[in-house]
Length: 142
Image 1 (tube, rainbow, N blue to C red):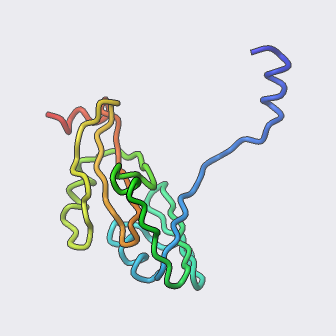
Image 2: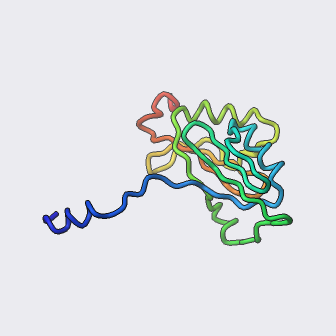
Image 3: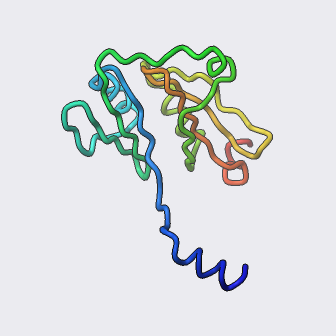
């Protein structure tokens, strides 16, 4: 990288992180569902919630009566809404599998791109993937 490019990069604003924001029709049941996954509300004004578990935040915004539009292509390819990296993916899979209101939509499986993953579907049709790099999860595979 030349000195002009380095100077331009140094002058740019640095992006720090992003937060997933889900639109929901009724915030109370959505909050309860995420709380059983271990997410705790940090702030809850009417129609908005910030949920956190460890370093992950999920924002919920309520639009009364909202229902996600049916998208056959998205449904067919099991498209994800959020991809969450974790340590101890097997422990997390076992934790979520034991919860009566949690729908595991893809069991724990090894991916060819080096990740061990599983999916859950929330009450509003948002698909969450929990994943761990295989080189960190070698104990899970034995």
